[in-house]
Image (cartoon, rainbow, N blue to C red; front, side, top):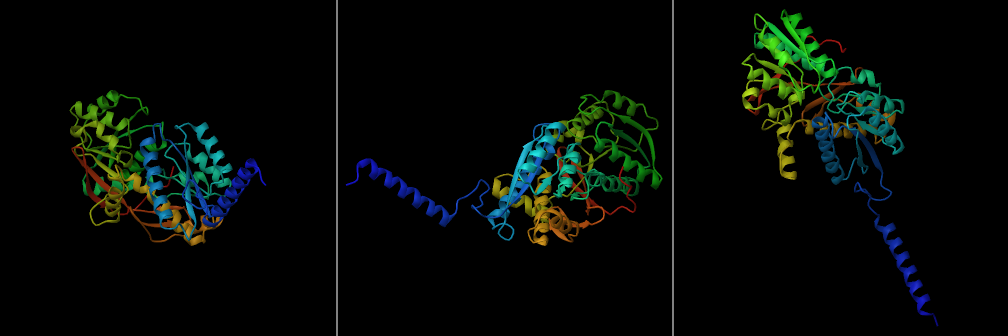
Length: 399
């Protein structure tokens, strides 16, 4: 006759065996919703979620995760689920590089790039390990060239953006003189006005004044005074200043009574620009990726996102994050689910991929997408659609 102790031990063992059988039969689930033993493709994102570039990296994260959840809920990519590992670099290069190395240990197979200046260094690491990457919301025209031949750019690049804006200013708005406001502290704020200059002058326009500023300097009084004293006054002011600098600049400019039209770029397609106030913003033109017009893929995406989450995206950058995953999905489908060089080659040769922000065709030589540029007008504190800009006749070479 078994003792009570031996009886309890046997019961525990039986329960353990039954539990193990149940898990083997039904499969357990991991944190990303995939079952044990199910194939998972791992994506890494070293992002600035709490520093100066968080206004751009955070919506990329949110859009990417929304796409991943959608794909996984539909069964994955030929049964393979997606998983994203996100780390906050706090806009610190040392931290970002360390986190990228950590992600190699976590066996990521793809890296989403940050808007920070050090993202190129992170992507060089993944290139050296034959891991494809993209520039995220980064538009600098030199990014993929500098990051290596496993890096891609799906959004419009700055050379195209600057050229499109310059052509519109000269050909459609009739501007013949311009004043540039740039910053040598960040490539985006320095190079984009440079691309604008090249095309504007090539068309016959003149740059009659120029000011530089310090990123996050908090004061543009010297630059505004210089603009006030420029004689004759320029037809327009062009700047790639972005938040938190751009609201300060626009506020001080209009407070000083300067009503010269301002042309700016996608770094201001974010609700953070509204800190300038409606009077300072009214009439500002800015280039960006796309606009959620009714009846467009982006408009439909905004409606679906609002239905799923309770509120629409605050910025088109979230759609860029979603599209990043959709490009990756198209690449994985073309590569048969393979990563590494097979995925790199598949992405490089993608054609006519329908995204929320338009149709994407990759240039296999430059690894940059052929994309259109949208132009928005701020009416008070409302973003309104102006037009889609035609492909420029000439685009400068990347710096």
